[in-house]
Length: 281
Ligand code: ADP
Ligand code: MG
Image (cartoon, rainbow, N blue to C red; front, top):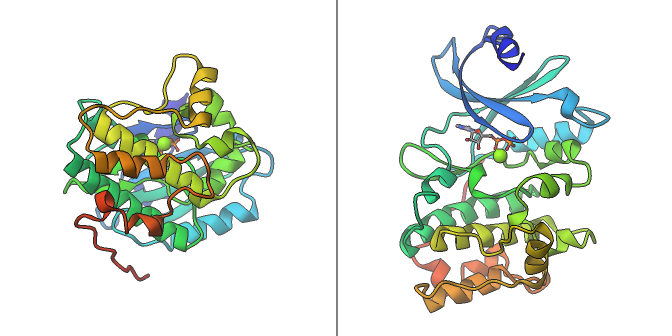
């Protein structure tokens, strides 16, 4: 039935021609597509409205989408437009050719220099969004894509409002998906600061890039949560002392003392070769 539906959407409003499936997330399917008028390649993320809890496309989601489409940054996947029918929402985005960073890391860890390069690009995007009041809240290698130049692009930044509608408690995903990137203060359900939570997830991503495995992991979910809650992780022997010290600042269980994006620019490991670029809309 999914394939039939896809066929039905093949000529998306006569504007986009759908091609192959690029990837599947928990709540959406992403297709390659071509703008029939301009020939431009795009990616179309299709969300089934039935999976949106309750109110559907509420005002706050629309607002978030309009913010998202105004975010212009070289390391963020651009949202071109949002189309909708009675049953579906279509996010028309940049097509990112190089696939997921996740696929690359599964072949082995990166050097500290390469890890730094990806991480700086990630933080450049994250800092830009935070300064626009937009939080991702689901940063992990599966949502980080690589373009044809090997530069990192954060996928679906700003769609967190949509995500929240799908998972109203924000924890559902944790229980059925990848809990490894979740900040300790989310586990205690006390309410949290979006910027701090993103910084924590970035810390987990950096650890994965440089070590090749997760900092907090266990086949037993409760044991994993406990490790996250206590901030219990060990750096591999080969890791430089500078990177260890930086990771400790990112994976600080106390959101109050956890490093901020601004603070990172003063860290010896992070700042090497980092140029804070100003981007204008
Ligand atoms: P979900 O929010 O359901 O996880 P994603 O937006 O992460 O959905 O997309 C699922 C997968 O589709 C991604 O992990 C990636 O492999 C692929 N994908 C998403 N956006 C793009 C894009 N703009 N270009 C190329 N592939 C993409
Ligand atoms: Mg995803």
